[in-house]
Image (cartoon, rainbow over all chains, first blue to last red; front, side, top):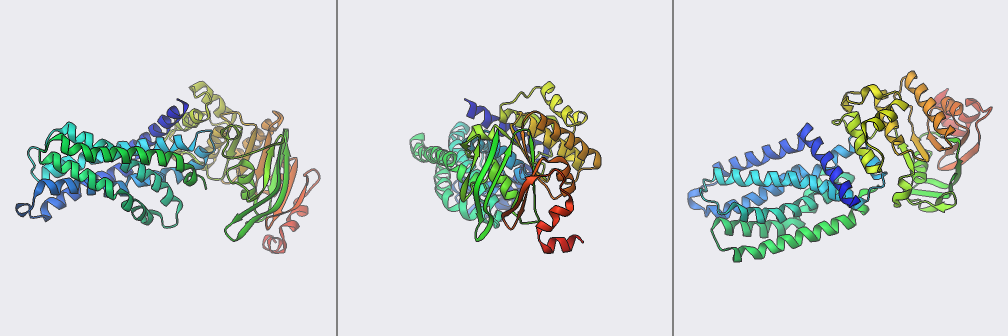
Length: 225
Length: 236
């Protein structure tokens, strides 16, 4: 219970800081909207299977936005050395990780929704399928992205390679999330039955839960100097 | 109440920052740690606070081994460093309330104002931290370190950027903390101020302890030669 309270305090602090500065969120929004616009004008939609394409673009755009924004969750912590003082409190490393991941997840969820609506609008998909089904796919997928982005955001934050290291570490791990996420989203856009969608969703949940547990346990190894 | 480091050795890759340092600090005492740059002062402070695990040697508090991984130990210490460690886009009271909640300390407005009054910073409680002066931020950082009433206070170059008034206030607070029976470990380049404030001192050079003793009747001229010939030459 105490861990949960600590995690909530850290998440609320991160979201408050993000709302006041808007630095990461604005960068992610601009990236998503501009990417969607560029995809729509650069691809010849008449000769493409648009619904399958949009599903892949939604997940790839979100992945790149996560790398650009959510992976920088520790930048504000390091600006004036605040994270050193957070680590010196009795709060467990696991609670710190879950709090930071929760705040990151809110941003990733928002960006994913934005990517979905921007791409379906620009690509002129009139009936994208049941939104609740899309939500059921995006929920575990975005948790997996947020967990991975937060964990490796700390790793790259420590490294002299900085932002360059983040995609190198995260992209190979997130290939299955993008693959199963795009598969499930394209099947919803193609109005396939839920039975064909539930398999990829189960995988996304397995990845989300597995990565969250692993991240919580392993974070102490990357949190401290 | 005694904090002790025995045979502390710390390496950063191939560089040995501490070479078997023994050090101790007692309650009702301010221990100053002096030394030239790269002498191992901050590493010693990080090791004593448990932030860094020594490669050899151990840290004891009242005879029990200290570990930075132990939340109970972290609840007993406070830290003020030259980087204030505050969130610029939060107000002073929001910063303090956040850290109080993590420490399990009272986060009520009255409790926060009380601790800010201790460091003469109550008037900035609602100010955004980013627009405070360096000295005001340092006072708030000191208030943050006192929120949970720690038994040991570690200070790493706390006078950096403070105006004379800020320095005097900080000295007053540290003397009050000493009177409460707490341990204060002060790392500083400011030898005259350290000598005036501390009861005992340790001088480090190249990761080794070259002096450990009371500060009474010591002058700056007694300490500086211990830093090495190059430091004394630069200073002159």
